[in-house]
Image 1 (cartoon, rainbow, N blue to C red):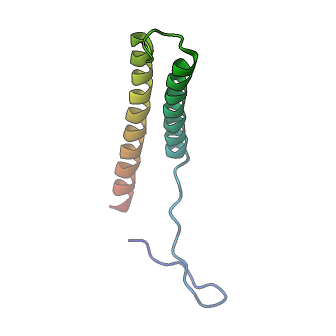
Image 2 (image 1 turned 60 degrees about the horizontal axis):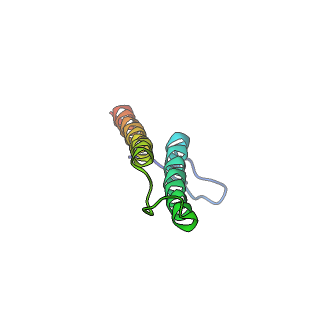
Length: 91
């Protein structure tokens, strides 16, 4: 557990703040953008009636599923590595 820092001018001790990991935030935002793009593609497909069945094609669905799955995998792997690194630093 982290110890409080030295007291400030008022005599209060501040706990160190946990920093947000920039890479994890970027990956999470890109995952959100990918999901929004998929929903937008489906809505545009329905509005334009470009396909006889109002869904995405098989190839498009496979590509988007692969991209979203890959983003989730990279995000999970990165967060897991950071947790392991912090555990090793605490020992």
